[in-house]
Length: 68
Image 1: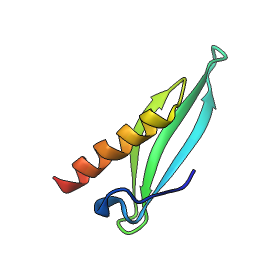
Image 2: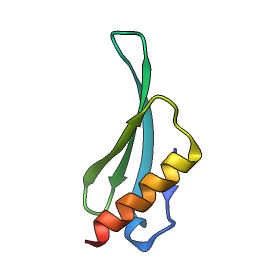
Image 3: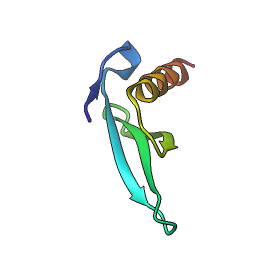
């Protein structure tokens, strides 16, 4: 995935998505952000069908969380 730059608080964040195969043979996708400046990882969500709007909304949610 790539760099997230829609919001100033996410300037140093990178987006990553990886999959996990469960014991019941389901594939789940884990979305997380890495803040390179703060050296923190933020778990954004887990889904079985990742779509662009989910990623966009999770980036907005993270930006609001970082502002607080």
